[in-house]
Amino acid sequence: MTARPGEGWRDLIARALEEDIGPGDVTGEATVPAEAHARAVIVQKQAGVIFGLGVAAEVFHQVGAGDLDRLVPEGEAAADVPREIAVIAGPARALLAGERVALNLLGRLSGIATLTARYVEAAASQGGMATVLDTRKTTPGLRELEKAAVRAGGGRNHRMGLYDAILIKENHIALAGGGLGEAVARARRAQPDLEVEVECRNLSEVEDALACAADRLLLDNMDLDGLRACVAARDADEGRTGRRPHLEASGGVNLDTIGAISATGVEFVSVGALTHSATTLDLSLLLEPA
Image 1: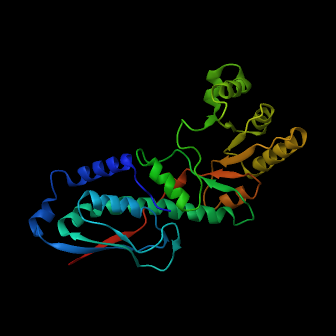
Image 2: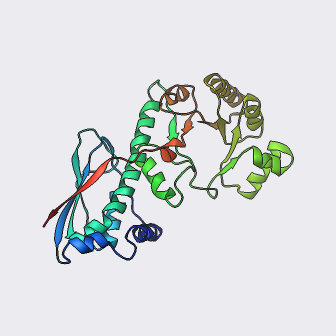
């Protein structure tokens, strides 16, 4: 999978370059002849999943460094490092000017893809089949790219924002008036084509959501026994009504707990850490005169 920045991401990258370069790279301009050319190699120094080479290519394109040649496929885990993952040849000053922004973005996105892959593997470790989802806990301005990195790591996107899915939480219920049933009814009238998901904090709230025929239930911060009880309640309700809303576990999820959570029988596990706690993958750029 390759990130393909649209006009919005070209603008974001332009702002990132402006932030870093400002009126000019004083060191590069002082020490490197204007006519100098160089060859740059991006090296992956840490095991993990590479994602974001398309973004790095756009960075170097904007600074006038030339075209980036990709040496590895994106979205595949690699343990044999260090390895060369991309190469570019062009004006030396331009390569130096784009280096940090390219590595920042590529390392960030690769870190998210790598962490997601670890969560996907851990989710299946105890026989569970839950799909790993991201959340809206993303870096402002980078959501589309960060969610693309989650997909590259084997996860799936929850909702992109407040505009493409309905998730009714306790504050919505309190403000809607008339309780959960009224909130669900209002949501269905306003957006009949969208799935209605309801956040539930205990078994009683799950039973209420089932009675309202919610399409999906977000099980918030429940322990394993609570999750299993909710799965049983959903299954029993399916036997009576023929409806089978999906169950999504959230809260208290880490690499040590997701396997057991997945094994309870929920269909989804959402993990904010995929984007808010991912560590940048270690990369470097090596330059030599050309």
